[in-house]
Image 1 (tube, rainbow, N blue to C red):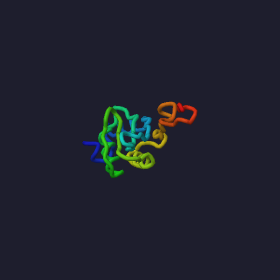
Image 2 (image 1 turned 135 degrees about the vertical axis):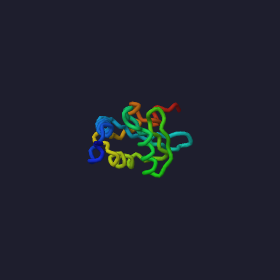
Image 3 (image 1 turned 180 degrees about the vertical axis):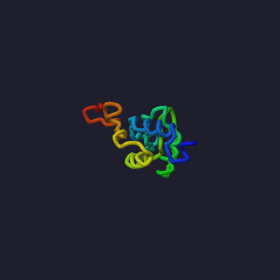
Image 4 (image 1 turned 90 degrees about the horizontal axis):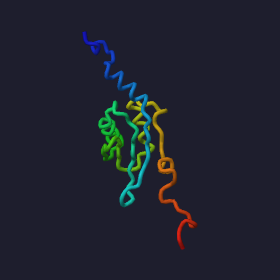
Length: 119
């Protein structure tokens, strides 16, 4: 008999749930050409279908985007709206963190004081 007849999860479903709980997902925004903002979602393992997650995020946020090199790029600043969608997809809240450019690079981008500039 098939285990799905009784509503039991299949082995692949169980492994995917375990994989989701072990992710360390980072959400950050970045300014691109002409001041356009994009939201980057990264930190997924190979055990998770990143293309499907990207599709669900684009659909839920009503925006365009792509998946490149294990990173989901979403057009626009959706940093605050990504977390609830990832929670609905089954990722635990403890595995999702918001990163700023300061945390990523060690210093804030394009933030120079008057003393840094040559007069």
